[in-house]
Image (cartoon, rainbow, N blue to C red):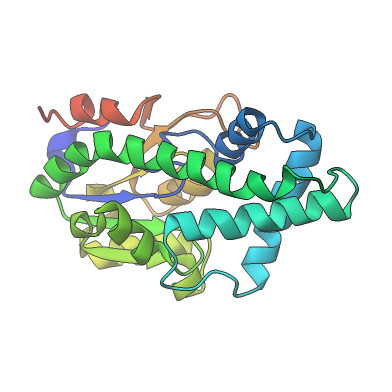
Length: 241
């Protein structure tokens, strides 16, 4: 448990936490693939997902000004390209419509969630300094601005900018430094036990794990100072109306 009276600052993860309520983005995308009727298996999709993530990590495809919709389109185009090139997907009259349909569904999913969650972020930021620490592609500021979230964070620590990626505890150390607080007065809120909770704990921070439908890489016995299954539970954790 956490003694909330001793918490003086908050570090939020972004992807998978704020924008999907604990659900891994591979699962969000897979649902959209199914809804759109893309005729591939989940195993084939997972291969394409991993390929696109690795490609984006090594190549400057995402521009700093790209919104989340721009990011989704580029990511999904890479996935579909992989599926076609590996003979998992045939090119036909429907193929060209897949990217727009999937990206649109996923973007609306995130926007609808964020529209509900923003009041929580607003009330938390009225009480605490808040920093965002995220593994992202260099455009998280544009994404936050597009969703109207930029005003809720005092600093942004983004992996593509600072050159450190989770699960390296050093990226959370940068977040603690940005808050100018002792680590034990900072709580980290994230959806990945491996990438958020473990490195945050290594820095001496308190932790809140938003435990949702993950990628399958977290220990089923893993825990944190507080475990929640819905972003809106933060209202009761922090005792805000």
